[in-house]
Image 1 (tube, rainbow, N blue to C red):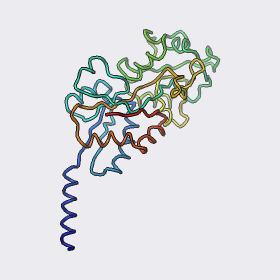
Image 2 (cartoon, one colour):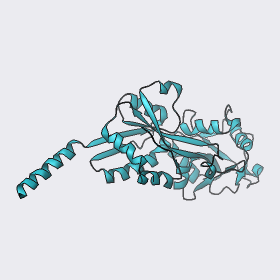
Image 3 (cartoon, one colour):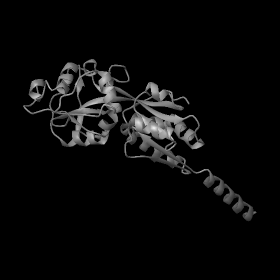
Image 4 (spheres, rainbow, N blue to C red):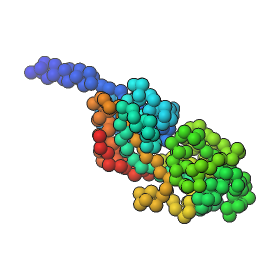
Length: 269
């Protein structure tokens, strides 16, 4: 009897090992921390699978291209797919709505500005915090590349930003973590991040109200700057990918999303 039990255990172990899979993920840099955290929780529940999130941002277009080429299993997209991307054999699954944040360095004592004043900062017309009721200090405005998801949503959020030509002195930072590092280390800075980055900042930078509104109003529809966090999938996907998606729908997955100051979205796939 003992021999039968041992043999059965070995068969089950071999079967489990045979179904071990690695889920490769990459894309929008702003989504990496959240998906990495959920991946770690998933692997505790499903130790037969490995969730490999590329910690180097591929950008949204790079993630979609890597998925289309079969190099990864899931692409991260912090925005809706473009018309051209929608023609590809891929399926976006929105997992969370995340507030975009106009953040300022911890030393900045200005709390609220208008959307027009925000645009004037990026146009180079306002260049000192004193002009906004703050200290007499030069504003160090930071931005992201035009192809970046955060930047695209930043432009969409405020009408005066849509076609605004940024002043030459505005510093462009390639990656989301570069923006977070700069806001946390450079005094008198301002730049766009998201609420997930803000939750990790621990006071090194904070949210600025725009037109009297704050990112906390996102769930109620009172905040215009938002990012649609999507997992983009190939039409044919493995059982491990389906399990991972199912974990996002679970109470544990939803709790992690809320813990990152994001709003879970009902998931269907």
